[in-house]
Length: 327
Image (tube, rainbow, N blue to C red; front, side):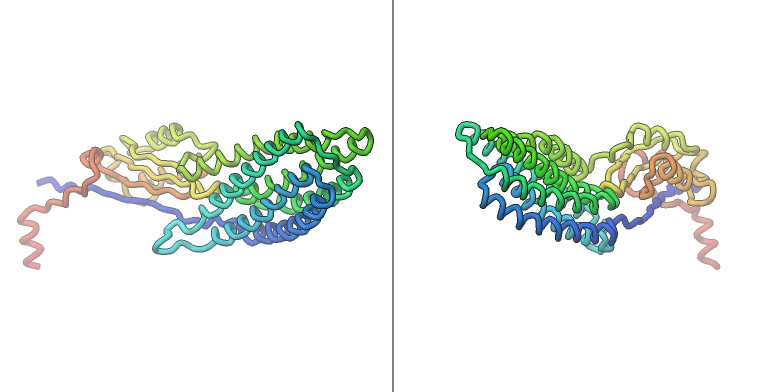
């Protein structure tokens, strides 16, 4: 009787992809500066009654929450995997970015509604107060933005930087409104500045929300064509079929792939992890062509390709069993 065995194998590469201590330090510095700007902005909004300053304060307030969330998420992301959380907490960064996007979207919509109401009933705002608080806010925002831009550029940090960028643009709009108010006395300058802030921030906020949603829904990472991955795996010597192919990401820096590779009769002899094995060739293609360092591959014989049941146990001739028993 011919001996046949189904050889099933997997290869995995564990990689930690936390944002690192540098990102946490930068987020901490930005949080401190932004909190100070928030206090100054609150005083300015109360003193002047400016909607533009109030809009800017709303964004600064969410920035404080956003930066604190990003800082916590960054710390959680570097925790090692555990029995209950085998991927670790790397996705905490994505959740933090999603929370920040939702907060920013809410504040942006609120400012837009307030601005529309003020068009009907314009409010007089002192230009001198706008100018002073606008300068203070802009300086603080630029300091925070420079600090964050030097980070790793992960989704979590980019979400926090987007908040601070919104504040910087808001401060510019406040300064423009102050100049117009001081030079022309136009009552709508403050309201128009608020709408400009909304127009600039809304597309960026929606884009970040879509990006985080895509990751949370296990979408394929940007820049990786799943059809190309399938085609390259199928081209690996010894592979007859590829199925159950999944490409996703834990966060925006940790793409992963899993697949079942059905090996041909010729490939069966090289299904091991040796120098010329199917697993080595396939994992090398995934790493070198697509940057997929974390791969989990299951090798299947043709008979096993259509179902997920266990392989048929190895059959041994009865004389062979008796010979082993005698020994």
